Length: 251
Ligand SMILES: Nc1ncnc2c1ncn2[C@@H]1O[C@H](COP(=O)(O)OP(=O)(O)OP(=O)(O)O)[C@@H](O)[C@H]1O
Ligand SMILES: [Mg+2]
Image 1 (spheres, helix red, strand yellow):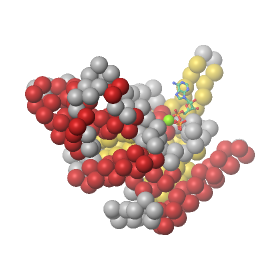
Image 2 (cartoon, rainbow, N blue to C red):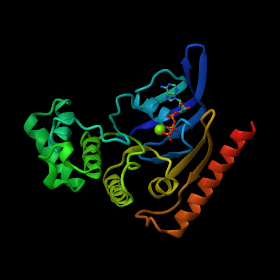
Image 3 (cartoon, rainbow, N blue to C red):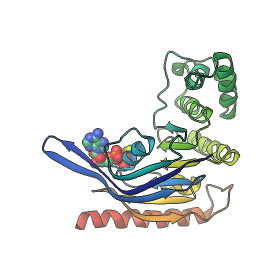
């Protein structure tokens, strides 16, 4: 079962005393079950705000947001791995399974399988401080996938990594996505990454954050990151971002 997300007329205003700022406005967006959507846009355009609302972490919005079915399971992956430092890699993954009522033995066994999926078979008994940044992010990815989420929400998950590690994790994500249909919302400022991963790239502009364009990436998978057609798509996305930014300056 994969989830459907619908945003309609969504608006989020941050209020601080007497001042207020409109972070996002007029967001109309539907994520069909099993689709992979990337959201790109300049810093501060409201990408994380949108993702936090999708995750249910922020409920102070106006307009409509629906997650169907309402009991769809979700997992989030952020820029930082956010692991528990006092738990080993295996126990970090097992923790989320135990929290769902799975026995400790089975949780640890399943955690080991997911760590193997992200290429970390040898690292299960290491603590986060003993792992590289890329390895920690792999643990976080294993933890996100271990709960078998219907909906995967990712906020710049690879942006803090070196390009080589990021490229490997992108490939792993593509492989893992091919194994199970799940709905993915992937926020990034990396246009090439968005075009490589997603079926659809949603472009936002800032002040307030609005959707200015949607680009379908009509390329079969597996894709090659150096496919010249991806470079063309990236050029189109960039042109929309530039256009959105110049509109923001003049209005
Ligand atoms: N808790 C908050 N209180 C007040 N303003 C906020 C809060 N969170 C976000 N904002 C504002 O909302 C706008 C959108 O922020 P958001 O973090 O969603 O942007 P972003 O697109 O994710 O940026 P980046 O690419 O830098 O991560 C910004 O102007 C930001 O200052
Ligand atoms: Mg952000």
